[in-house]
Structure formats: C-alpha cells, structure tokens
Length: 458
Image (cartoon, rainbow, N blue to C red; front, side, top):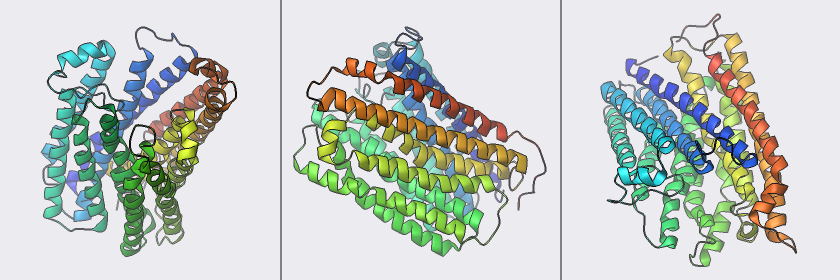
C-alpha cells in the first residue's frame, strides 16, 4: 500500500461483498417463489424479494465503485486522499441508511413506508430500481456529493491521468443522472422516458466509463504494459461507449408512446453497442499477452480477462439478440430480457468489482497477493460463479424463447400465467444454477482467509 489513506477502501470492499451475498440470497428466494408461489408468504412477498434483490445489486456495486475509487485515486494522483475521515463518515452513513431502507422494505407495507418517509411531499417511490424512500434518495445524494468532493479535491492537488479523469467523469455522471430519480411526472410516457435516463444511462453509459477505468488500472498493475498504450485503448473504448450508449437509449423507447423514429435510432445504435465491449475484451487479452511483469496475483488477472469476455457476451451478444425493434416487439419484457440482464450485470460490473477487490485487498493487508493456495481457491470461485451464470443465462434464454412462442407468436397464444406453468422446468434449473453461484461466492470470500506463504507488498 503506497498511501495510508488507501486503507479507507477496505470497509467499502467488505460491505460490498456482504451486500452482494444478501443480493444472491434474495435472488434464490425469489427464484424459488417462481415455482413455489407461496414460499415465505406473507413474510417476504415476491414483490418485496424482487425489490430487495435489485436494490442490493445497486447498493453493493456503488460500495464497490466507491471503494475502488478511494483505492485508485491516491495512486493515480500520487497524493494522499483529501479527507480520509470524511470517507469513513460517509461509509457509515451510507451503510446505515441502506440497511434501514432494506429493513423498511421487509418490516412495513410499501405504502406505509412511503407515507412515513415523506413521499407525499415529493412522490419518487414506486418505480422499478428507484423504489427507495425519498429520505434515502436524499441521503444518497449527500453521500455522493461528499464522495465526489473528496475525490475531486484529491485530484486537484495531485497528478492527473487519463484513468483518473475517465473514472471521475463516470462517477460525476452517475451522480448527475441519479437526480432524474426525483422527477416523477404524472404522464406515463414522460415517466418512462426520463426513468431510463437513470437506469440506461447508468448501466450503458457512465458505469461503462467506471468499468473501463477500473479494468485499465488493474491491467497496468498486473501486466506492466506502458500506461500510454493502455490509455489509448481506454480513449477508444469510452468514445465508442458514449456514441453508442447515449443514442442507444432509444431501444427502450420502442413501445412506450414515443415517436416512431426511435425504432430506427434505437435499433441502429444499440446494435452498435457490442462494439465497445468487444474492444474491451480484445484490450484485456492484448495487454495480458504483452505483459512485462509476472505479477504474483494470478487471480486478479483471471478476473480482468473474465470481465472482458463476460461483459461482451452478456451486455453485447445477449443485448443484441433482442435489441432490434422487429425482434423486440415479441421479446420485450420476457425472460430473454432477464437472461440479458443477469449476464450483463455480472460480466460488466460484478466481475470488475470482484477483480479490483481481488487485486487490492491483499495489498491493503500488507502483501502483494494472497498465497498460492488461496488463489487456487479463488480461481475455483471464479469458474463456479461464471459457469453457473452462463447456465442461468441459458436457462432463462430457453424459458424466454418458449414464452415468446406460447404467449405472443403462436396461432393460439396462451395467457401469461399459463405460459409460466409451461416453462417452470427452466426456473427449477435456474434455481439450482443459482445455488452453485452462491457456493462460488462463499468460496471467494473464504479464499481471503486461507493462510500460506505470501509475498510482501512492494
């Protein structure tokens, strides 16, 4: 660890993994409710399990991004963090606020939670992914502003690099687009139009800048390739990301009442969205093949390569499968969408956060890498989680194709619930793949507690 203030990243990483575990547990609960409808009812209804599952996804990734930024920025700027105390204070505020919000979801009817948290003053609740109470949303804004202030002041007094600038652009964009979660117009078309300015422009816009910066940082460290080479690749990737991703928002505007031209714009530019992910895959493998150092952390290198491949498959290939308007007419809102979402979030964002944790946590604990025994275990966790996510995606894809045929395409279409009965076998297979994923996550966590011979951090 080069700078003492990098240590503030450690609690963020620990919280991220704990929340990730909670997300997977609620995913398994929800998956079982698909086939055993009254499982845990009325204690955890399906809509609450789904809300907790998706909200934990967002929060644990935000903790991971924040921890990564607090670790990276001091090294990139070659100076100590502006205020480690502010970083720790915001950690506890964010963690407590997030925990209380989840408790609120589980302990109170959603309408009662809305009434108690000021939703009548400014109605912001009730929309997918943005279900957080008003007070929680305000808290997120306060934490984000303090976080960005801390990092920006650090950058102003230190070295400026392409990686840190791209990271900060992504983080500032994340905060700015979240402000649209406070805008909840009565007109349903406008509501959906601007809702995607948070959801899409996060995951297919500014979050991709964060992904590129994190991946570039790790690859510099583990390969020793010249910074100039990696930064040129980074510029190409983020340019492609912004050109395709921003206008590609149109693939969400096909069927919500927007003008017809969005079917052309959305189809064309979202069909180009796999290109930056393919470039990211080529970039990762190219840098590893050109490496100039044999870094002891083999597990982090594996996560970096896996991020490129799985983000291309999940966000790129599975996104393209149903992004053209004539195809999306039949597939939107089916399990094909769920298949794309699962692999895309895992490949693009979960894996890159696990990658930076894999690289940084040993250094934060005083060594360059975990022991060989621990790394072997961690690489087992990589394969278990990744292969099980591939199977989850394949099972959901098969369910989605059958659902489209039974419900929307055949000469004698059947109802939604009748179609769900017909595809329940795929839900059972998805559930067992999810159990394997959880086992892989437990092994990942366990690997950090395995003792053995280690090399001291440089």
